Image 1 (cartoon, helix red, strand yellow):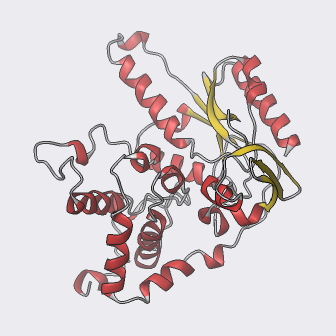
Image 2 (image 1 turned 90 degrees about the vertical axis):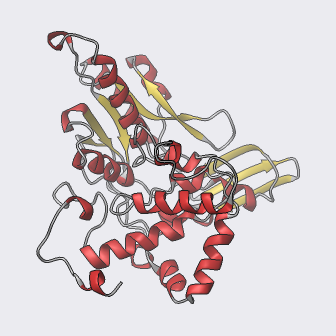
Length: 335
């Protein structure tokens, strides 16, 4: 991992020195123990801040879209001949590149506006699992080495196996290496366990309609409509979200249970063919809502009905953005 970090810093420094990128989006050490946070580097000497390890959680494609959109908006008042192109460099693992592919397929920006520094990924630590494994106490100090995480809390010290606190999205990840990149840093990571990708969904599908609805209502009852899932999602970038529209008003702004369910229903279905299972929404949810189970059900249906896995290649367009004479049409007549 140290070798990857060294190469990553060298590459970021080179890009900024040669002015091949205006900003590099990556990760730096967080202010709290055993955390990492997104960072934005614009000067070559800042490249030393970059890190890459199992604590790097967020899908950075979200910031790529935000920065490019903000730049394009700022250029609208500039004369066409004076407008400047901005290139965003980004440290990207498999799920990040999948999100970038979706952005490109949906024509949010051009391929030349993003420089992808690919990195192999063997999963990231889910902070909620780590805290639970540490006994629920605040972590004062921590260290990772050899597949083990040593944590120190006010109640004592404990060693936790890294694999036990990996995100559920990572445990069964099918694309843990970059799909597209301009440069690859490090050797490809070994496969995770993609054969088990839909095991949880299959268990859920085996339940009765009443049981499934009861689970959905129970999970949505936790939601406080803080919109953290929407803000963290790289595929949520509508200038005005349907939840904030007033003409017509799709959902209210209060705590009505039905409005919350409708909000989540609509957001889930906006993810058809667009969710890359990066786990960012689950990671930021303060209430622990099980969003992934429902998103993976949609993902499974998308694969079985259309043979599509979101962002798996530039050539495989999202199912709702293409027409194929070979679509399986049974579901249209027999839902």
